[in-house]
Image (cartoon, rainbow, N blue to C red; front, top):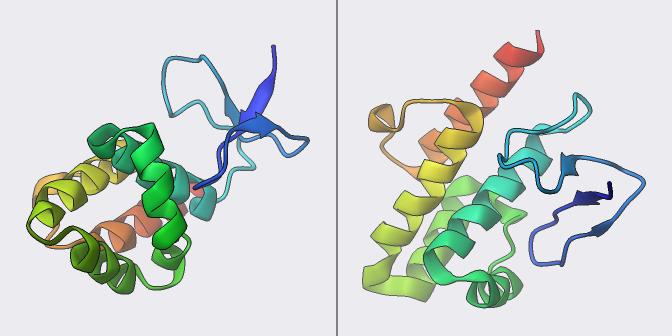
Length: 129
């Protein structure tokens, strides 16, 4: 069995830093050493890919680096809004849904992507204690 790490706009590749088992059938198959940032980036990438397709999501990740969401979720969301215009609401909804699924949080209580990332961070920290 090969172990892979998924990083934003890069392809999956074998890595000594193991974070995810490919083929587990779920994206919750993470080891304890996985960081919040790694999980969030993975959820964002899955959300983009599920809405746009794999190749288009790679192009989007090239122009709007998902690492921005780690430091400034509002800025990341605004950048996607500028890029997609009227399609933005559907796209960000898909990303929020993936993040909510990743962290088992209720989507209905969230007003923005920034709220989603804050809730995910709280949930992640609660699960680690």
